[in-house]
Image (cartoon, rainbow, N blue to C red; front, side, top):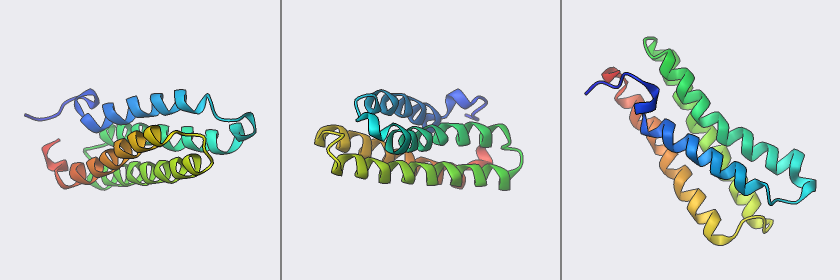
Length: 121
């Protein structure tokens, strides 16, 4: 079956939901982190679904679609790094860190798969 809508993309849905959960999780971070860790985590996690959606909208241009998927991959890796900082600063519990990390490793693998299978769109 050919994907017709971005809502059909599992990576879009998973990354959007994960960004919302991370937004909520960062509400408990210390106030002094509002303009550093909190801002960076929120920006990088939101960048993943934004890039996927923008790339999907331009999917008839394979190079543009691929570039946006690569940007989404980069943002998911950036989010993983910020999660490591947050965990090491004791802003996240071990369980939260592991859960979010698993999500973003999974999310990071999905744009690679989409890039390989972009002809199906």
